[in-house]
Length: 278
Image 1 (tube, rainbow, N blue to C red):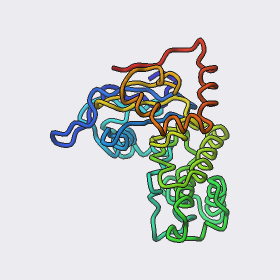
Image 2: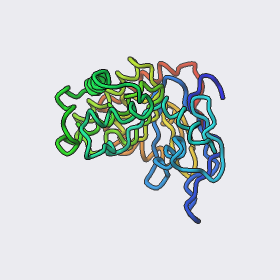
Image 3: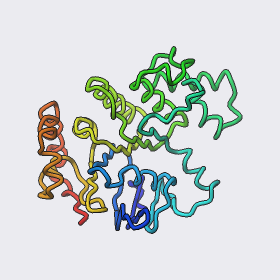
Image 4: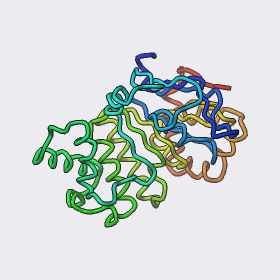
C-alpha cells in the first residue's frame, strides 16, 4: 500500500445471488482528501462502504485501510483498525433509548472502558459542540431532535475516538438546502482542523462541488473514473455527462460550483490527468 493512500480497493467483486453489484472494482483514496462517491441507484455505493468497513464480505478482491488488510481479519484484529475511523450512517443510526451524550459515549466505553465520568461526560460534551450542536442537546433523546440535529449527533459519535478516517453515507440526504450547505461547511472545516481523510457517498451535487477534492463514479459494476469535477466533465461517458451536465448539475455549478471548478482547474494545471479505470 502506498503511504499516501488511506484506502486501496483492488478487483472487488460483490454479488447477491445472481445479481452482480461490483465486478473488478478498484480505486484509491489519498490521505487528507475529501473523496466523493457517486453513481446511479443500484450501483452499490453503500455496499461498497460496507465492504470497506467489514460489514459486507466480498466474493473476491483486496481491501486495505490505513495500511491494514481488511479481508478475513479476526474480530480482535479488525477492532484495532476500526478504532481509527468513524462512521456516519444515512439516518444517524442513533440508539433511540440513549441520550445524545450517551450515544457519543458508546464507542468510548467500548474501546476505552477505563475512562469514567466526569471525564467521559466532558469528552462527549466536547464532541457534541464540535459537531455544531449546542451542549444542551446532550441530555436529549434522538426523537426530540430535528433531522439535521440527528445528523450532527451521529457525526459527534463518529468523531468520538478522534479518528483519522471518516466515512459519511449520504450525510446531507433529507436536509433542506441551507442545512445541507451548513453541514458541508462543517465537514470541510473539521477535515482541515483534524487532518481527516473523508470517504463520502452522496447524491448531492452541491456537496460534490463545494467540498470534494476528487470524485469516483460508479457505473457498469465498477469505478469507471476518478478525478476532480473538471476532469470528469472532460470525459464522454453518457452517465457522467447526464449527471454533471444535466439541469441539476448545471444548477450546482452555477450556485457556487463554477468557482469550485475554476479553482480545481487552477490546482490541476500541470497535474496528473483523470484516472480512467475502464
